[in-house]
Length: 262
Image (cartoon, rainbow, N blue to C red; front, side, top):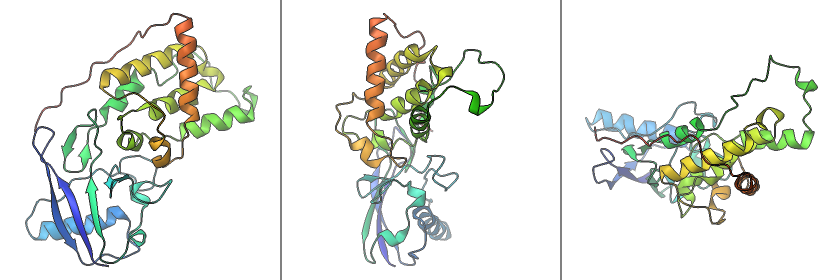
Protein backbone atom coordinates (compact mmCIF):
# COMPACT_ATOMS: atom_id res chain seq x y z
CA UNK A 1 0.00 0.00 0.00
CA UNK A 2 1.06 3.56 -0.68
CA UNK A 3 -0.25 6.15 1.76
CA UNK A 4 0.11 9.87 2.32
CA UNK A 5 0.41 10.93 5.96
CA UNK A 6 -0.34 14.39 7.27
CA UNK A 7 1.31 14.37 10.69
CA UNK A 8 1.16 17.05 13.37
CA UNK A 9 4.71 18.12 14.30
CA UNK A 10 5.27 20.27 17.38
CA UNK A 11 8.46 20.75 19.39
CA UNK A 12 6.76 21.27 22.77
CA UNK A 13 3.68 22.77 24.46
CA UNK A 14 4.88 26.35 24.10
CA UNK A 15 5.91 26.12 20.44
CA UNK A 16 3.39 26.40 17.58
CA UNK A 17 2.92 23.21 15.58
CA UNK A 18 1.95 22.43 12.02
CA UNK A 19 1.09 19.51 9.76
CA UNK A 20 3.88 17.97 7.72
CA UNK A 21 3.26 15.59 4.83
CA UNK A 22 5.07 12.28 4.47
CA UNK A 23 4.82 9.58 1.85
CA UNK A 24 4.61 5.97 3.07
CA UNK A 25 5.03 3.82 -0.06
CA UNK A 26 5.80 0.45 1.54
CA UNK A 27 2.97 -0.26 3.98
CA UNK A 28 1.75 -3.81 4.50
CA UNK A 29 -1.98 -4.26 5.20
CA UNK A 30 -0.98 -6.57 8.05
CA UNK A 31 0.94 -3.87 9.90
CA UNK A 32 -0.56 -2.26 12.95
CA UNK A 33 -0.87 1.52 12.84
CA UNK A 34 2.07 1.92 15.22
CA UNK A 35 4.20 -0.47 13.17
CA UNK A 36 3.47 1.71 10.17
CA UNK A 37 4.73 4.74 12.11
CA UNK A 38 7.82 2.75 13.10
CA UNK A 39 8.59 2.14 9.42
CA UNK A 40 8.10 5.83 8.62
CA UNK A 41 10.42 6.78 11.49
CA UNK A 42 13.10 4.36 10.29
CA UNK A 43 13.03 6.05 6.90
CA UNK A 44 13.24 9.49 8.52
CA UNK A 45 16.23 8.43 10.61
CA UNK A 46 18.02 7.12 7.50
CA UNK A 47 17.47 10.57 5.98
CA UNK A 48 18.89 12.19 9.15
CA UNK A 49 15.51 13.73 9.90
CA UNK A 50 13.80 13.97 13.27
CA UNK A 51 11.53 10.94 13.88
CA UNK A 52 7.89 11.42 14.81
CA UNK A 53 7.35 11.26 18.57
CA UNK A 54 4.31 9.26 19.68
CA UNK A 55 3.24 7.43 22.84
CA UNK A 56 3.28 3.63 22.98
CA UNK A 57 4.04 0.87 25.43
CA UNK A 58 2.38 -2.57 25.57
CA UNK A 59 0.89 -2.50 22.05
CA UNK A 60 -1.72 -4.97 23.29
CA UNK A 61 -4.62 -2.59 23.94
CA UNK A 62 -4.07 -2.60 27.71
CA UNK A 63 -1.89 0.35 28.73
CA UNK A 64 -3.79 3.20 27.04
CA UNK A 65 -0.63 4.94 25.84
CA UNK A 66 -1.35 4.94 22.08
CA UNK A 67 -3.29 8.20 22.00
CA UNK A 68 -3.81 9.37 18.42
CA UNK A 69 -6.51 11.19 16.52
CA UNK A 70 -6.72 9.48 13.12
CA UNK A 71 -8.72 11.29 10.46
CA UNK A 72 -10.46 13.19 13.24
CA UNK A 73 -11.49 10.12 15.24
CA UNK A 74 -9.89 9.04 18.51
CA UNK A 75 -8.06 5.74 17.93
CA UNK A 76 -9.21 5.65 14.30
CA UNK A 77 -12.15 4.32 12.30
CA UNK A 78 -12.71 1.00 14.10
CA UNK A 79 -14.81 0.81 17.26
CA UNK A 80 -13.74 -0.73 20.57
CA UNK A 81 -10.02 -0.91 19.76
CA UNK A 82 -6.97 1.15 20.59
CA UNK A 83 -4.62 2.66 18.01
CA UNK A 84 -2.11 -0.16 18.51
CA UNK A 85 -4.81 -2.69 17.58
CA UNK A 86 -5.77 -0.83 14.42
CA UNK A 87 -4.36 -2.51 11.31
CA UNK A 88 -3.57 -0.84 8.02
CA UNK A 89 -6.06 -3.06 6.18
CA UNK A 90 -8.65 -0.65 7.61
CA UNK A 91 -7.41 1.85 5.00
CA UNK A 92 -7.19 1.75 1.20
CA UNK A 93 -4.23 2.06 -1.10
CA UNK A 94 -3.70 5.72 -1.94
CA UNK A 95 -5.49 7.05 1.15
CA UNK A 96 -4.44 10.25 2.88
CA UNK A 97 -4.38 9.85 6.67
CA UNK A 98 -4.33 12.81 9.05
CA UNK A 99 -2.68 12.07 12.42
CA UNK A 100 -2.96 14.42 15.39
CA UNK A 101 -2.41 14.34 19.16
CA UNK A 102 -5.25 14.59 21.67
CA UNK A 103 -6.56 18.15 21.59
CA UNK A 104 -7.47 19.19 25.14
CA UNK A 105 -6.20 21.98 27.40
CA UNK A 106 -5.36 19.60 30.31
CA UNK A 107 -3.32 17.42 27.89
CA UNK A 108 -0.43 19.69 26.83
CA UNK A 109 1.70 18.48 23.95
CA UNK A 110 5.05 17.05 25.01
CA UNK A 111 6.27 16.63 21.44
CA UNK A 112 4.57 15.93 18.12
CA UNK A 113 1.85 13.33 18.86
CA UNK A 114 2.73 12.73 22.52
CA UNK A 115 0.74 14.53 25.22
CA UNK A 116 1.05 14.82 28.99
CA UNK A 117 -1.87 13.02 30.68
CA UNK A 118 -0.65 13.55 34.25
CA UNK A 119 -3.99 15.27 34.94
CA UNK A 120 -5.56 11.81 35.00
CA UNK A 121 -2.98 10.70 37.56
CA UNK A 122 -3.86 13.61 39.83
CA UNK A 123 -7.57 12.76 39.60
CA UNK A 124 -6.72 9.22 40.73
CA UNK A 125 -4.49 10.52 43.52
CA UNK A 126 -7.31 12.41 45.25
CA UNK A 127 -9.69 9.48 45.49
CA UNK A 128 -9.28 6.62 43.03
CA UNK A 129 -8.31 4.12 45.68
CA UNK A 130 -9.48 2.47 48.91
CA UNK A 131 -7.58 3.64 52.01
CA UNK A 132 -9.69 2.02 54.73
CA UNK A 133 -8.39 -1.12 56.38
CA UNK A 134 -10.04 -4.16 54.81
CA UNK A 135 -8.03 -6.82 56.60
CA UNK A 136 -6.18 -9.64 54.93
CA UNK A 137 -7.19 -11.00 51.57
CA UNK A 138 -10.38 -13.04 51.72
CA UNK A 139 -11.63 -15.84 49.55
CA UNK A 140 -13.24 -14.13 46.56
CA UNK A 141 -16.26 -16.42 46.78
CA UNK A 142 -16.80 -15.29 50.38
CA UNK A 143 -17.33 -11.62 49.55
CA UNK A 144 -20.99 -10.56 49.48
CA UNK A 145 -21.04 -9.06 45.98
CA UNK A 146 -23.92 -9.84 43.65
CA UNK A 147 -23.09 -11.04 40.14
CA UNK A 148 -24.67 -7.96 38.45
CA UNK A 149 -22.67 -5.60 40.69
CA UNK A 150 -19.46 -7.55 40.12
CA UNK A 151 -20.02 -7.40 36.36
CA UNK A 152 -20.67 -3.65 36.43
CA UNK A 153 -17.59 -3.07 38.58
CA UNK A 154 -15.45 -5.07 36.15
CA UNK A 155 -16.90 -3.22 33.16
CA UNK A 156 -15.97 0.14 34.72
CA UNK A 157 -12.55 -1.13 35.84
CA UNK A 158 -11.73 -1.89 32.19
CA UNK A 159 -10.94 1.83 31.68
CA UNK A 160 -7.30 2.15 30.61
CA UNK A 161 -7.08 5.93 30.99
CA UNK A 162 -6.18 6.56 27.37
CA UNK A 163 -7.99 9.90 27.21
CA UNK A 164 -9.98 9.20 24.05
CA UNK A 165 -13.14 10.32 25.85
CA UNK A 166 -11.62 13.73 26.51
CA UNK A 167 -10.25 14.09 22.97
CA UNK A 168 -13.62 13.23 21.41
CA UNK A 169 -15.77 15.37 23.69
CA UNK A 170 -16.55 18.85 22.28
CA UNK A 171 -16.33 20.13 25.87
CA UNK A 172 -13.06 18.34 26.64
CA UNK A 173 -14.76 16.59 29.56
CA UNK A 174 -13.12 13.77 31.49
CA UNK A 175 -16.40 12.69 33.06
CA UNK A 176 -16.40 9.19 31.54
CA UNK A 177 -12.90 8.51 32.87
CA UNK A 178 -13.69 9.86 36.34
CA UNK A 179 -17.01 8.04 36.44
CA UNK A 180 -15.37 4.74 35.54
CA UNK A 181 -12.83 5.11 38.34
CA UNK A 182 -15.51 6.08 40.87
CA UNK A 183 -17.97 3.42 39.72
CA UNK A 184 -15.75 0.35 39.81
CA UNK A 185 -14.93 1.03 43.48
CA UNK A 186 -18.46 2.14 44.36
CA UNK A 187 -19.96 -1.23 43.43
CA UNK A 188 -17.69 -3.12 45.86
CA UNK A 189 -18.25 -3.43 49.62
CA UNK A 190 -14.70 -2.26 50.34
CA UNK A 191 -15.38 1.00 48.51
CA UNK A 192 -18.50 2.02 50.40
CA UNK A 193 -16.83 3.85 53.32
CA UNK A 194 -15.29 6.51 51.05
CA UNK A 195 -17.81 6.26 48.23
CA UNK A 196 -19.38 9.73 48.31
CA UNK A 197 -16.27 11.61 49.45
CA UNK A 198 -14.38 9.91 46.62
CA UNK A 199 -16.86 11.21 44.05
CA UNK A 200 -16.67 14.76 45.40
CA UNK A 201 -12.86 14.80 45.52
CA UNK A 202 -12.32 13.38 42.05
CA UNK A 203 -14.86 15.64 40.33
CA UNK A 204 -13.41 18.67 42.10
CA UNK A 205 -9.94 17.69 40.90
CA UNK A 206 -11.07 17.31 37.29
CA UNK A 207 -12.52 20.83 37.50
CA UNK A 208 -9.20 22.17 38.82
CA UNK A 209 -7.39 20.47 35.94
CA UNK A 210 -9.49 22.42 33.44
CA UNK A 211 -11.61 19.64 31.94
CA UNK A 212 -14.96 20.75 30.57
CA UNK A 213 -18.43 19.90 31.79
CA UNK A 214 -20.39 16.87 30.60
CA UNK A 215 -23.47 17.68 28.51
CA UNK A 216 -24.33 14.07 27.59
CA UNK A 217 -23.34 14.37 23.93
CA UNK A 218 -22.13 10.76 23.96
CA UNK A 219 -18.96 11.14 21.87
CA UNK A 220 -16.96 9.68 24.76
CA UNK A 221 -18.95 6.45 24.75
CA UNK A 222 -18.65 6.19 20.96
CA UNK A 223 -14.83 6.19 20.95
CA UNK A 224 -14.07 4.38 24.22
CA UNK A 225 -11.91 1.37 23.31
CA UNK A 226 -13.31 -0.53 26.30
CA UNK A 227 -16.94 0.37 25.54
CA UNK A 228 -17.61 2.04 28.88
CA UNK A 229 -21.11 3.49 28.77
CA UNK A 230 -22.79 6.70 29.86
CA UNK A 231 -24.46 4.71 32.65
CA UNK A 232 -21.29 5.20 34.68
CA UNK A 233 -21.69 8.99 34.43
CA UNK A 234 -25.32 8.71 35.54
CA UNK A 235 -24.20 6.71 38.58
CA UNK A 236 -21.49 9.25 39.41
CA UNK A 237 -24.06 12.04 39.23
CA UNK A 238 -26.29 10.17 41.66
CA UNK A 239 -23.34 9.81 44.05
CA UNK A 240 -22.67 13.55 43.76
CA UNK A 241 -26.31 14.36 44.59
CA UNK A 242 -26.13 12.11 47.66
CA UNK A 243 -22.85 13.75 48.66
CA UNK A 244 -24.42 17.21 48.43
CA UNK A 245 -27.30 16.09 50.65
CA UNK A 246 -24.70 14.88 53.15
CA UNK A 247 -22.97 18.27 52.97
CA UNK A 248 -19.67 16.82 51.77
CA UNK A 249 -16.99 19.13 50.41
CA UNK A 250 -13.75 18.19 48.62
CA UNK A 251 -11.01 17.61 51.20
CA UNK A 252 -8.12 16.87 48.85
CA UNK A 253 -7.02 18.89 45.83
CA UNK A 254 -3.70 18.54 43.98
CA UNK A 255 -2.57 21.66 42.09
CA UNK A 256 -1.71 21.00 38.43
CA UNK A 257 2.00 21.10 37.66
CA UNK A 258 3.23 23.87 35.40
CA UNK A 259 4.32 22.56 32.02
CA UNK A 260 7.69 23.98 31.05
CA UNK A 261 9.08 24.08 27.55
CA UNK A 262 12.04 21.80 27.00
